[in-house]
Image (tube, rainbow, N blue to C red; front, side, top):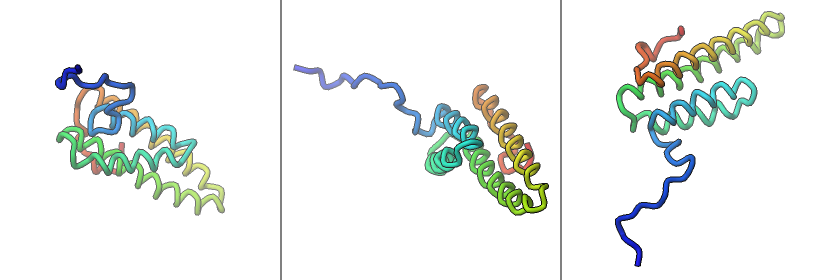
Length: 125
């Protein structure tokens, strides 16, 4: 018969939605993809909200950073959309994309070094 203490083999992708370092990396990657496909950012936001309260303290700072990145980028994008009627909004969209990319790169570097984000509530990078 089978041994009851054996665990099923781990499949590729297991644990990506758990509140771990891999999930934070996945959220950051989804944010990069969201520069082209908006729904990817929404999926990352939902994952961040679902896992923030279950994560270790240093990972909570990354979840907070990711959540704020989404909402602030959405605000900047809305302002840029309104300003496109006077042409300057195009530059706002570009600045918002650069801002998101910089925040994601900072987050990826810190999560790979297992470091928390110093000021996760910051509007700046």
